[in-house]
Each structure stands twice: as structure tokens, then as C-alpha cells.
Amino acid sequence: MGKVRHNPWGSVIKELWARVVNTFNSISFIAFFLAGILFVGGVGLWLPYLSAIISGDKNASFFESVNVFTYSFAILGTLCVDVILNNQKSTKDFLGLGMIFGVLALICCVVGYLTTKTGNSYLLNFGTFLTLLIFICANVNDDKFDNDASRTEPDPIGYKEAALSKIKDGERNE
Image 1 (cartoon, rainbow, N blue to C red):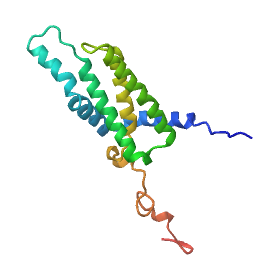
Image 2: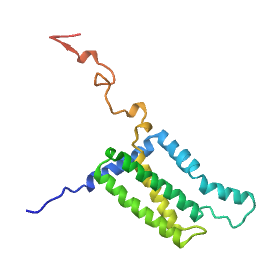
Image 3: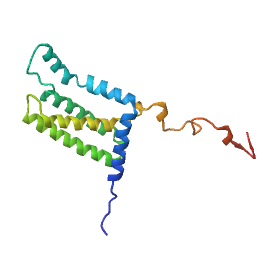
């Protein structure tokens, strides 16, 4: 009899949905993503445009292809290094889905850049959007974004607080 594999799509979609929900449940992750990844990390995207507008350039392009390509490629490269160093944190199937979308994002970025080296490339922007979605899904469950209410590990006694009424000593509750 031939080999029959388990269908992982149901669990992968549940994991993906849980990570999307976790994105909106963590104020610290939202702040990290907006301030760190988009604002500071994306300074190469918005600062040249702002500088051109201030200097009076009427032909300024907000998402200049070379800047968007560099930004997207840097994030994809960082994610690849993270997978190599810390791949034990995610399931194989979810990691495989990330690799599929990562390759798709890379292809979109490379083709978008090669076809539109100056100006704005919609294909490159789509690849960057995919890259940012991959980044969100890969990093949203990091422990540093947890708050006290979302802790999953038990305290030393196994509960948040001890309930004296549940402690039994022989036949008496004390």
C-alpha cells in the first residue's frame, strides 16, 4: 500500500489566522511594526520623497523602485537568516508556507525591479506587501510582545493564584 500523508492545510490555516489575530491583540507589536519596521526601517522609502518635495521637485516618486527593492530584500534576507538560526520555533508546514510566499515575494520584487528601475513598480510594491505580511506572521508570536495577561506558562504552583478552598489536607479543607 502506498504512503498516505496527513493533510496539513487545516492546521496551517488555523495557525495563520491565530497569528493575524495576535497582530491586533498586541499593542507592543503594532508599535514595533509601525515605528520600527515602517517608519525607521522604511526611512529609505519616505525620506528621499520628502527631501524631493521640500526641494520643489515635481517629479518625485514616493515608492522609487531601487529603494523599495532594497527595503524588501533586506527584510526577506533577515527572515531567511532567522529561519536558519531559529527554525525550531515553528512547525514544518507553516515554515513551508512561509518559504512559498517568500519565494513568490522575491520573484515579484526582482521582476518588478528589473522591469521598472526608475519610478514606481506595482509588482515590486506587491512583493514588498507580501514581504511585510510574512514578517508579521513570522514575528508576531515572539515572547517579547506578550503582556502579563497573555502569559501561557504556569506559575510555580501551576496557577496564577492559589485557591485555599481547593487545598485538601486529609479530610479537612484548610
